Structure formats: structure tokens, C-alpha cells
Amino acid sequence: MNKPIIATKLPLVGTTIFTVMSSMATEYKAINLSQGFPDFPVSEELISLVNKYMKLGYNQYAPMMGVKELREAISEKTLKLYNVNYHPDSEITVTSGGTEALFAAITAIVKAGDEVIVFEPAYDSYIPAIELNGGIPVCISLKYPDYKIDWNEVRNNISLKTKLIIINTPHNPTGAVLSENDLKELTNIVQNTNIFLIGDEVYEHIIFDSLKHHSLMTVPELQQRSFIISSFGKTFHVTGWKTGYCVAPKQLTTEFRKIHQFLTFSTFTPLQYALAEFLKNPDNYNGVPAFYEKKRNTFLESIKSSKFTFVPSKGSYFQNLCYSAISDEPDTDIAIRLTKEIGVASVPISVFYKDKTDEKILRFCFAKEDETLLKAGEKLSKL
Ligand code: PMP
Ligand code: GLN
Image (cartoon, rainbow, N blue to C red; front, side, top):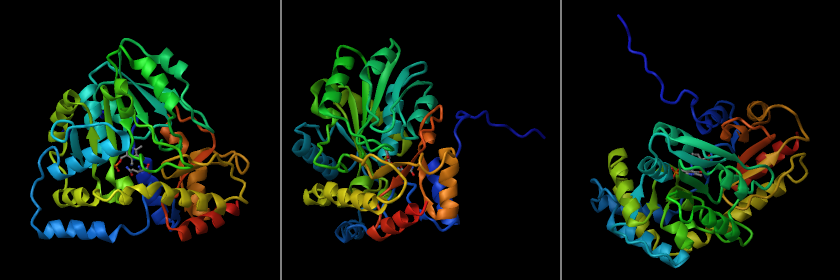
């Protein structure tokens, strides 16, 4: 009997690095600074609110676009922070995490043969989502240590087929953030074109050293062509709750929702009501940058006598460390060795490049209890 054989749609894709490294951390009982997630408790108030709405009976499907109260709260927050008005009914969609929003936005825009500009190292869901839609990723490399975008290179890579540019600020896995000047450069490139933008801004509240988050929505020329994506998982330290949202002008949101309604249809209902109430108090997100800046500093202080070199992360909850003074092993090998022998798991940066560029850099997540960070720092300093 012939068994059917699947012709894979993603021949170059294996299991994501986050799953691989987290599983290895568990197996070897290593401190897990690989996959990005906090290890500290979630706000009791937020947990009580979810509980409250469950008990009140909000346990059936939410509206496809998200509950009205939450869309209104997102609209108010966006207006307050960035002075941009998105209509809750037609321009805001609640999603099951930033990942779903990315997939829906890419699918709404990309057709077979379209080119999409992606900056590498790139968050690992972008390229598979582009390819599943028949799109062609056009990768532009950002280089250690500052990972700045060379806008001339972007200009040189634009073609008549360029449909979309994906921007991620603050950036995972490098901790780089875009400046106001970067937005000006981007504006010069896309104005008078039909190019769309995705602003992956899931770390909008995790930015340091008094830097300002420059959202794509703050420049009208960019805003009118952008899907801007955020994640409550990041902002409120609840990555396992998988809730996020996408704001985009009406015409873009209409297409986005056509995809979203058949991907997940809607998102966990009681959580949406809870988030709507929690967002009413801006202190719940205004304190996030200082909170994580302290964590970054604790981690950097803990490795200051080590042989690692680094540029302090400007945003996201990741710090990259260069190990070239310690070893010339490939980054994937040393990441495995440190997990097994030293007991600290990290993520090798080469996996975020299509051509596996290896600059001897490892990514460490510092969204952890101070005690966890100090213990990891002590182990890493022994190398
Ligand atoms: N984009 C980036 C850059 C991320 O780091 C993450 C977090 N994994 C996501 C999107 C997805 O966010 P979520 O966990 O809300 O799906
Ligand atoms: N965003 C997280 C990271 O970069 C992990 C997301 C995931 O596990 N899919 O580590």
C-alpha cells in the first residue's frame, strides 16, 4: 500500500530555535536565557481581572475583531502615546499574539512573486510566512555591533516587485532601535510607491536609556501604508497568554480581518475584558521601560568581569554578547556547549540569518528574576 508523502512547503525549516534551546535547557537543567519569556510573577491585579470576567460569564467567542472595550482602550492608548487616531471599529483588530498578526498581515499583502524586504537577523516567523504566500524574501544584513540599517542598501534592493518592508523596532534579536532619522529615510524610500509596511513593535514599551520609541504610525506617509503590531504578552509579562493586536488604516484592516477570521476567528474572551480594564491605568505600562532597564543593567553588571564583549541593548529584553575572546567555535556549537557544560542556555544569532552569518554572538534574555540573572552571570564569568 502506498502511503501519501507530503511535499513540504518549507523545506529549509525545522523546529524553531526557541523550542530547541528551551527543551535543551530543561533537559540539562540549565538556566534558560534562550527563549524570550519572563520568569517572574504576573500582576495579581491582572490575574484577578481575568478571573473576574470568567466568573461573570464572559467565556464564549469574542467578536471576530476583538471586544469593543479592548479596541477602545487600544485606541485611547495609541492616541495618548503617539497622537494617532485609529477607529476602534474599523482599524483595530485583537489577535492571538503578535505572531498571528504578523502572519495575517503578510498573508493579506503578499502574492506569488512579490518581494519582501526583511532585515536580518530577523525574527524567525517572517520568512516562512512570506514563503508560504509565494513571496520572495529579499534579505538585508545588519551587522554587529550597532545593527544599523544602511538605507542606501535598501534603496538598491527595491524593485518593481517590492510589495512590503518589514520593520522591527525595538529589534529582536539585536536590541537595536530605529531613530527619527531612520523613519525619515524610510519615508523618502516609500513615498510615491505602492510599498506596504509592517511595523513589528511588540517591544514598544521595552526601550532604555531615555530613548523614545519611534512608531511607524507617527509619520503620516508611513502610517497610511502600515500594519502596526503589538503584543500584550510582552508589555504585561504574559507571553503564554498570546494576545496582541494590529492597528492599520481601514482598507488595510479590512483585508487583514479577512485572513484573521479564518486563522483563529477570535481571541480568548475574558482576557480581552481584563486587558481593557487594566489598560485604563497607564502606570501599568509606563513603568515597563525602567523595570527592564534595571534588569538589563543587573545582567550586564553580572558579566562585567567576563571575557564577553557587548554593546548595551537599547530595547527588547535581549542582550547580545560576543564570545570571540573566549572561543572560535560556531555560535550554534557554543550555545549547546554552554547549555550542557556551564548550565546557561542562550540563542545563537546565526539562526536568524538566511545564510547563517556567524559573528560569534549569542542572545541572552534578561526578562528574569535578578537572582536568575546573577546566577547566570556568575557561570558565564567563569568562561
Ligand atoms: N515579533 C517579535 C520580534 C517577537 O520577539 C515576538 C515574540 N516572540 C513576536 C513578534 C510574537 O509575539 P507573540 O508572543 O505575542 O506572538
Ligand atoms: N519571541 C520569543 C523569542 O524571541 C520567543 C517566541 C517563541 O517562542 N515563538 O525568544
